[in-house]
Amino acid sequence: MTDKPADNGTGQARTQGTTRAARVAVVTGASRGLGRALAHALAEDGYRLVVDARDGAALRAAMAGLPAGAVASAIPGDITDPAHRGDLRRAAEALGGPDLLINNAGTLGPSPLPAISDFPLDELRTAFEVNVIAPVALTQMLLPALRERGGAVLSVTSDAAVEAYAGWGGYGAAKAALEQACNVLAAEEVAVRVWRVDPGDLRTQMHQDAFPGEDISDRPLPESVVPAFRRLIGERMPSGRYRAADLMPAGDQAAEAAAAAEPAVRS
Image (tube, rainbow, N blue to C red; front, side, top):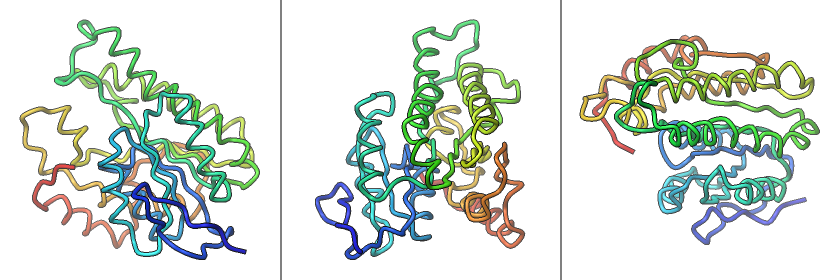
């Protein structure tokens, strides 16, 4: 039995004759950085994708570079919008139901990063809305299907959630809240893996925004940590908190160091 190919947001189907047995991944914030790198890796591994980002043009451009034969439903929108989250759920259901949710979309907050004493409260509310409430809401929405399929929820976190860095209070507090929500969810769910992963400092636009005007070319590219995520997902490791650096296969350590030395690229 075959499915009708999903549209990738460009008006053209990405493949023909895809079977319902293929796994489905929902990846938020997939237009650039780590989200884009993970979406491409999952497509290479045979996943059908439902991806989103606020910038529709950037999202379509990112998905246009997927491997030949990949299936991707690209849905521009704001993850804090309940209607948009509903669109993501329906798109995943149309592909056969979600096996994996990657909560990657997030916001840094004001740039340059302000001290807690000066942090605008409306920006703090936005940080919690985007980094905590929206991913929890999407997780709740997809949980019934994930339970049925023995799926997994992977939320991207940060060392700012567990360390005290000046200026990172708003973002760090939001990520800490997300982590605890995931921690409790893991204790409550039997059939679903619940992971939170700190990818480390990467050469992304968000990291550049955290250090405006500074040279961050010494940070590794997002693609360099993809093997760590592939290992976590592929081996279906126990629920918990992981650092990408600790998950990297031994053979990829040299590649990671080489990636850090490549010229800076802005996504």
